[in-house]
Image (cartoon, rainbow, N blue to C red; front, side, top):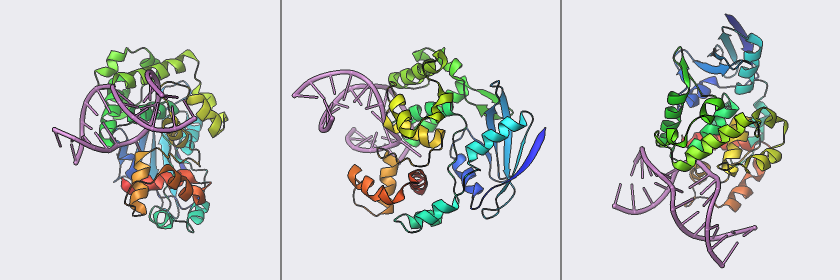
Length: 287
DNA sequence: GGCCAGGTGATGG
DNA sequence: CCATCACATGGC
């Protein structure tokens, strides 16, 4: 058993993080205890639960992180997932003079929190394609409950090795479309077969990752942008094709119709180089 | 019941 | 290269 206290640069509003995590029924969040139990894997891919509990405030953020083994490796994972090495103040300053200033006042201190594993992120993005959020969560939940594993009440995503062995029919039974079944299983087979190495992805630029991943059947620009954003934590992504972003912009600016791509590109110019935060807060505004 | 959903690939010009 | 369409199914 290990336990560590970590201080983070303010502002960092962890209760908002928990609130967002709790939207996904798969996450083991306790708003009362101000904590989340994370399903992480150590280097041997063994499931390890790590608990992250808020001990401070948004202006003096502090966390108590605890686990049972592999302290150093898992602490690094927690810091990566919660972006504890970043500082949100420059982001806040940047947006105070933009068309999103009100949004950034409202969500001040909300960090970009990553999915717990890159593979999970990729599968989740494929599953979420072209589905309403509610049904998307249902499908993801079935996927994890059927092929993942549970430990002390925390669900662990399946490994690519497990999914690569499935038949398309196994996912069809969970009400995946045939196409979605193919995308999920075929991509998992590429990973286990060695033609797609997720561990090397973070060494590449956004553009190189885009070029590499869109070649894969079932992975288009929207999916890659989401993987860059929520899988790798890249700071400057704006998923222009995303219906949620479009609706959020329409609402934020009081537009009559959804914005065109050209309008979105134009208004986003002043948001560089922090487009990912603009995207995140726009999403938050309609959740 | 009809339209839309945090898209993508296939097809046809 | 660009426009259009099928895809599966739930939610409203």
